[in-house]
Length: 166
Image (cartoon, rainbow, N blue to C red; front, side):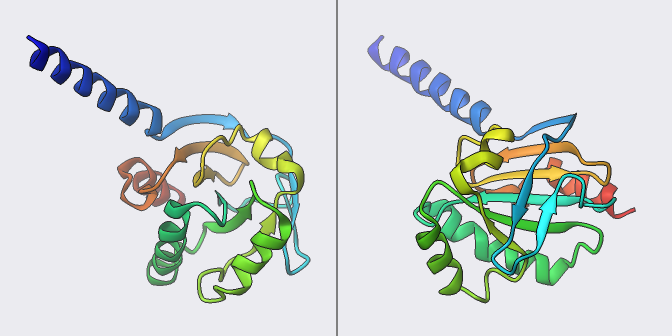
């Protein structure tokens, strides 16, 4: 009997974890935001100018981020999603740590990278995990929020991307 209860408990816990980390798809307007990259470029919900965008929230200490960011770069270079831009957003750590992490990995950060001072942008997008991926359409609406690793294997993400490429 204890084995059955333990098995059911483990199953329900696993199911809950999967449901919590699952990507959320919903079309909703993106909150107002503004970021300045380390290169001095300004990005905001207004400046996207009709271009779909993938916002990638990460932290230097995040082990999943350390694996995912190079994979994202490799995918971006290989598949070249022409219409979709990427903005990398370091947060949940000091500016010094984020800048050092970026400078030590120039081959990984080939797209614009910014530091989210005081987590304003992360809070606006309700980011509570690293990494978190937010896919915006050309009108600035949120199409998908994916928390945790594995965004490139997410069929929903792939499907939305192919729709944006048309």
